[in-house]
Length: 261
Image (cartoon, rainbow, N blue to C red):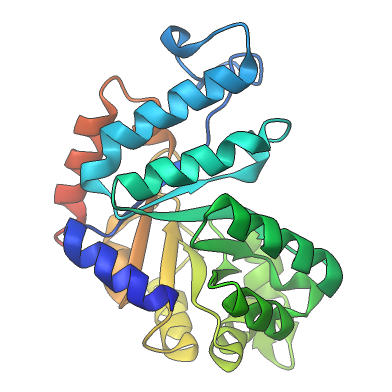
C-alpha cells in the first residue's frame, strides 16, 4: 500500500517534504529555467542532467519527488531513469500526471507509469471514474492522489463554489477519496484555501489519506495550514529548483515545516 510506503519514507527521512520536479528549458519562459551550466545542444540531455543533480542535492531532505509529465513531453523516456534515481535516494517517486480519461485509456497510462517505476500518480476526478481507476491502480501497486482543492486561484470557483448533491465540489471529491479507497488528496495552501477547508477534507477523506500540499513559495501558500493534515507531503518547487543552493533552500524549509508537522 502507498500509505505504508509513505510512513516508511517519512520516518526514515524524518521529513514530510515533496519536491516538485518541474524543469523548464531556457526557451520555455523568461525566468525560473534550467541554469546555463546544465544546458547542452540536446534537450533530453539538459533535462536529465538537471533533474539528476537536483535529486541528488535535495535527496537527504525530502521523502518524495514528483516529476511533472508536462515538463518532459517529447522526452518521457528519461522518466524511468529519473524514477530510479529518486528511489536510489530513498525517496518515493510520484508522477504528477493528473490523469483523467476513460477507463481503457487510463489503463494504458497505468501500465506505463508502473513500467517507469513510479510509486503513485496524481489523478483528476473530473471524468467520474475514480473507483475504477483506483481499483486498477492498486492492481499495479500504484497509489492514487486525487486533485481535491488545488492551489491556483481559479480552483476556488471550480472546487469551492461549484456544488454536487449539495456539497462543494472539493468536499464531494474528498468523500469520494474515502469511498473509493484512493490514497490521498492534492490540497492547496494558498490564500483562498481556509483552515476549515483543510479540516473538512481531512474529516471526509479519512485518517489514512495523504495530503499532497501545494503552493508554498512563489504562490504565497502558508506553512501553518500544514498542521491540519494528519499525513502531509508538503511540496516545494521553484523556491528550491532554481535557488542558488537547492540543498540549503530545502534544508531551510524543513526547519520551518517542523513547527507544524
